[in-house]
Image (tube, rainbow, N blue to C red; front, side, top):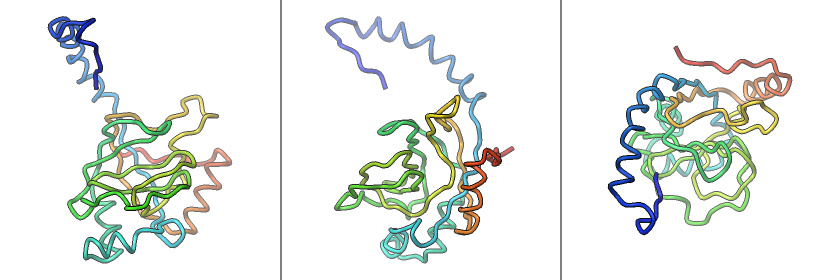
Length: 183
């Protein structure tokens, strides 16, 4: 997105400035990574998954299947540090935001709305439907590169059990977990 003041910069000058940059977009695609992100869709990690399934008139297993089915693109980053807007999900996820947003959404929560999915990176309010949680930190101020994903990256979600969630979380904290990159 480009914001400009037409009283300061003419449209022609803007086009002349931006057009050469468009040739660099192919280079960005070469730098994109393909992540496999583990997600627990069980119990306390997925407080809205049953409501999402009911609204979509499918089973919880089908919601999980549909959420893990595709390689999805990180469209852009925003709202919070390292917060990726990812999509497009299958049509069953064409849901409005929650009528009443939550005051507190835990970090690493996986949410859905309007055929997109996101990963909350820090404690914050939020109005999307929470269907899971990943043990992977998408934002960690202590890392040399604090933000995990970038716009243009591909993400495939992979269902894991709550036991696997805690095992992976422990490995991450100990610096012993290597996030899977898709070939």
